[in-house]
Image (tube, rainbow, N blue to C red; front, side):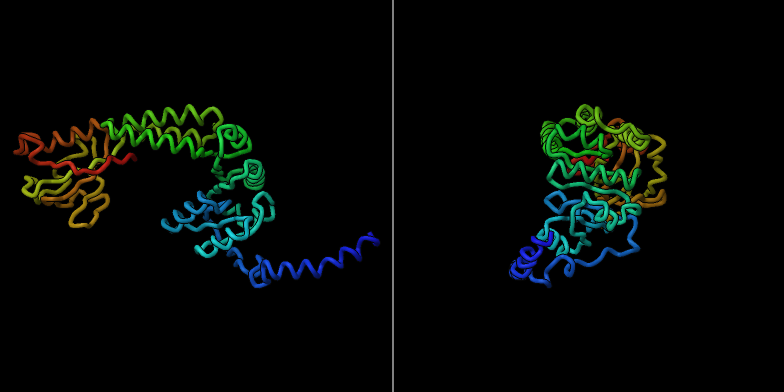
Length: 313
């Protein structure tokens, strides 16, 4: 109103002075953060630069994947910028902020902000703007799961639950239980926790199918003896895939890694072989290469299992 205007204008000067003391002009958001490249595409959008967001940024940098961070805390936004990130300073629940991240050209968005209400607003806005963009949200408690799924999240991660599963996995490994058995058990627990609210889209069904197909597939490492009978033989000449169902997917030799070795690759004593297959297929692999027809009667004389934890695929 006309009466209030003089009093409001009188406060502008002191407010600017305070801003200059607390946040000098050269450090204010408009001047400090570079713009998002207009040609950006096939990138990951990370909402929130807390602990989880920072881990995601490190992972994106490690795998050389383009990404954008949206952060409404100015100090954290600066930290993200200093870490080499493209940063948008603002509230990710606002359509204008989300549009600045070029959601329509992104591959996935990860919502890691700590506030449950803000999480829901962000998920709702993203789903409205980009109906097909995969959304991964971070839940703080079990009660948040149904709401985030209903709002449109494709996957919701519950850190406390996932941490408990990892403790379980490591404990069972120490007890000598096979990785296949552990993975099957963990997948069952996962389904009980998440499936009741998970979206039953075609993508979700395909992912579940792939998970079921990969159950039981494990990579186990074996090392050829220095005096191995297979010195100089090619992988193809041993007919490993045809006879056992397992596959040699990598060879470590003198600190060099040969990934997906061809059939003509020669074996040498001391080679470490990464063998992919079910437990039964891997056992057949050891038995086949130790078969009497190949001049070896005791598999243990040929192979020395490498002391490396089994890695599930």
